[in-house]
Length: 294
Image 1 (cartoon, rainbow, N blue to C red):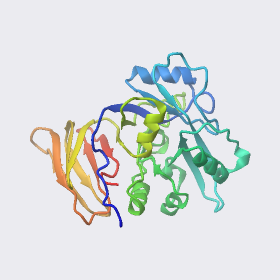
Image 2: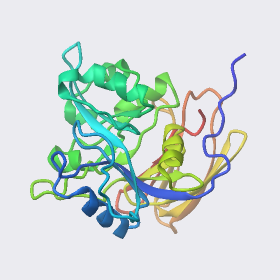
Image 3: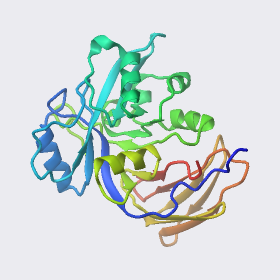
């Protein structure tokens, strides 16, 4: 007997701010891991994931006590057996990894270590929808800040929708992909708020895997609740609140002339395979949930 999908954000405890894709001097970043910890903590972050290319795990020489939690991670890149190129952020693994392993063997090892595998900046890389579905990724970067800086190709929304058509469990985080170098100076442009009781690596990783987080480029989703298929969202003042469904389906609330919106209520149709909440402020910056029911 198939179980009915459950509301993903039931019983929220507390939001913890974090970034799932940050590079250090261990690969092609401009800041040391210790400098990144101080930098992000100064902007109110509670955790970051170090995702250096083929260098896995948080280093042992971070400040003690660390100003924030640093989760193990790695970014793998290379071609698969079809010749398609991928960049994959693996959250929650320590390796070791080596390019000589090849991309697919390295992804298999990351999964063996319990990592969450997220397809990185698919539009920038040139991945097709078929690529996004090929390797059983846990999700895709719905927004990559550095890819926008490079050539405007920072959205992974199309690829995420194709993943959601297959499974509503697919996650769609916003990330920095921060390098903080002269060539790529941007950071603090995309993040997530994770629902967890405490900001420890194990608890945060479990919540990320379960998709119990919201993503943002600016506006704030403060609270989510559901009564059956009726979903309520509370947020910072915004111009639009949308219920985003499969294909062309959607609902919206808009503050075109009157006061800003801070709350919305939607009933998710039973025949929608997936739906998420998205908000947009006066500057066009957005925040969004994962699929509400999974």
